[in-house]
Length: 147
Image (cartoon, rainbow, N blue to C red; front, side, top):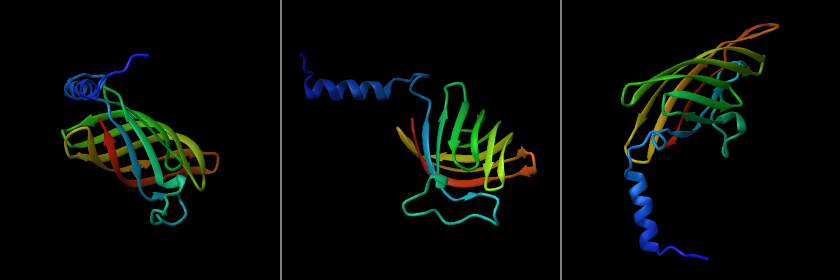
């Protein structure tokens, strides 16, 4: 078994964080916040947060994003970045207390900070078509993005 000296390992990790690469430039986000589930407004975030309060997002190097959360749902869209502020448009599966259905979404957010970890705040609104009509779940979340 081969071992790598600690100094060499730290040098390798440091070098990887300085490389400007499309593979390393895609963020993974973990956001927490209250969703609007369609029952009269949002609730405060639970301590510990419930599944409805959590969202995981991934943005590819070519600015396609995937977001997974219990509410407002599962979405894939295109992100337009303005070096901090951004907006996203796309579609997916909207989920609320009143049903589940396909539809579009839009999101407005802001990434702030520098380095490998940045803070993120985002408002997302979706519209879904169900057999009973339309649903419009939304969420306002803050969290951290790892680049």
